[in-house]
Image 1 (cartoon, rainbow, N blue to C red):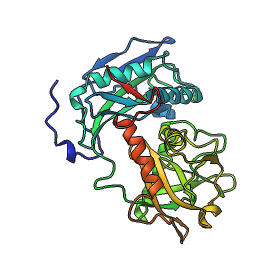
Image 2 (image 1 turned 180 degrees about the vertical axis):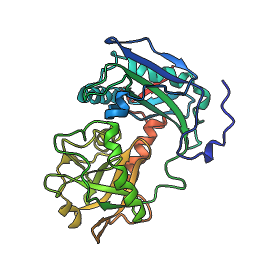
Image 3 (image 1 turned 90 degrees about the vertical axis):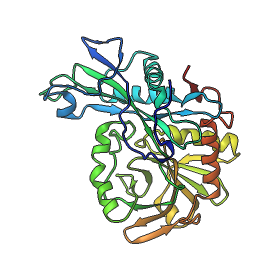
Image 4 (image 1 turned 180 degrees about the horizontal axis):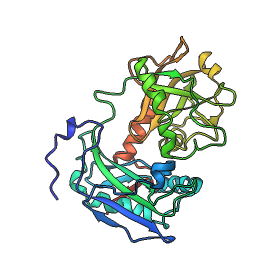
Length: 343
């Protein structure tokens, strides 16, 4: 297929309708075979479980064109595993073994002419999601579900390079200690919207959430995990049972340890450590941007500036970014199974 006539180097990070999507339905205790369809409309009851009690979850990953022309995804098996865990927590049916990756492959193949060319800076964003679809009026799980995947080409998250972001310590809690912070449920993101809109109005890029029990420990932001680099160049990753297990963060752990020779520690990180200057660099990590460097953190008027500055990524963060994206784009040989080729 011929590539779509798109100015790939200048598209933004937003939704563009593509030709095909994947749909499968769960009914009477089993999933159907699933189909690729051109129909982008979702038709459900006004009383559907997702509309009444927010029973929904999602994932996010990307397809890339590598330098040698292959179309690949990055560690889709981990997205599969995370959605599986999310479904169990939300009393939703899990997909049959292998179906998630198979469906991702099918929908990317069906939209190959929408996969941006190598070197354009753009990628194909893949959004798998599931929701309760039958009428539910009593508070209980739905009986029927729909799982869908759509794709959309997106430009680089940062145009002209990643400038360090400004965070603020949020007065809101992101997740309860034994709640749903560790899964990718839609409801987690709904409750964060007021906080992020408020932060933007106040001139910040994101919120930094503390643990709700003591409000002394760093957790994550509204849409990404956090990483820190100490003054010896070692990677320190905040640890908490309510942090979402980011696939990018877990990959950066391996990259830092195996490729860059850094010592990596996953532990509780105190806000006081950040205030006392324990770290030279910090970053947000996730699918969209890979790493967004942090320049400053505002704790109710007390501004903490990272030594790496407000102009560019710190040196260790830059190496982490370059190595991980190098693996994704095929410049660097990655660990076995990380790069999944769409045959």
